[in-house]
Image 1 (cartoon, rainbow, N blue to C red):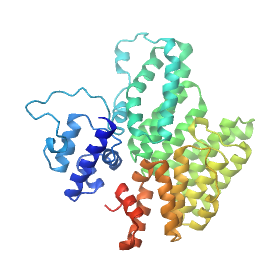
Image 2: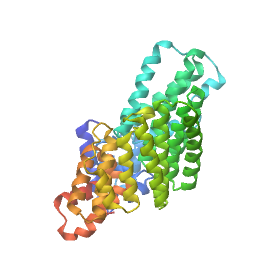
Image 3: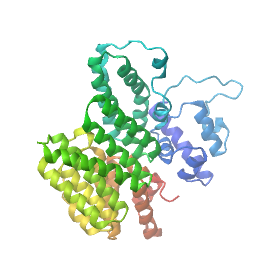
Image 4: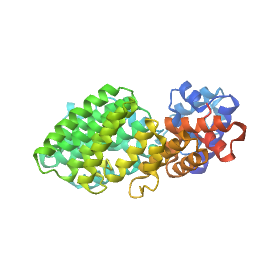
Length: 412
């Protein structure tokens, strides 16, 4: 599908869904898909080319396939599709299903070419670029071929290349875990994080293991397994803190340690443990001062700025809206990723809503949507605050607010 064809198709899906009186969440549940996938389809971001997926969507909408897609083949002339474009993170989930290079187990062979190393390095780096910008359809399409390539290479390459290949595989799985968390697919994030931890250990890069634990804890938080998140993170913090106290730490050690303290702050905030959450934020601030700069070791984006972004989020989770606004106002996050900048704006929107500053809340949310539309359209907290703004405004809701609520399906 061309971009224009995707937009037309998405608008048709949205119209048919509304005619049936279904919300995005209801239709997505009926066809076994995520709300974020359907949101991307309706906005013309996500292509739907596979015939089985088109048929599934038509069935969910209660219309013949040709009503949904007029040029789709009729039942008597259907042929296997050769389209390879993927849907949301579906292809990425398939990558996690089963063994990633099972044929190598039966027929071990050396088919690795050293000339491919630079290509693999660049491909793994691009995976994180797509993750940081929430380009999930493109991410899924890239991961489909990349993960098997990395897994096969790590098993067939000469010994001199294997440590680096395991490290590239670990970072790729970490990116996949982060993407699944943002898509509220925590079960898949758990699997990806676990694989990242194993690959990092095989690479001989201990800090990569700790970064993988950070991703694993995020999956636990999304699953509301706060005890598991706290246990995994505390074990990592204790081990790393002991090392840092006994050695002259490198900046990478501090980046990972500080990020783990931020993870504990998140866990305690979600549990409503105010004092414990604040203590972890203070510990992260202490590490950030020691580090002295914003860094992006292991794509954790740790540094003084990200600590304050997390402090804003923690304050909002604890209901301390005034504190969140005081911390966030004037905070310059321009040096961080789009995802971090949008997260700050989203949390400031939540804080303003708590203080009943509804105009400021809407302004923050719209600015966040401009930066990272997928985050605002699918994030549970964002949709909740938009729904609250609509309920408070009632019939007096502005056109901007109504349009935002429509785009996020926040009224369903």
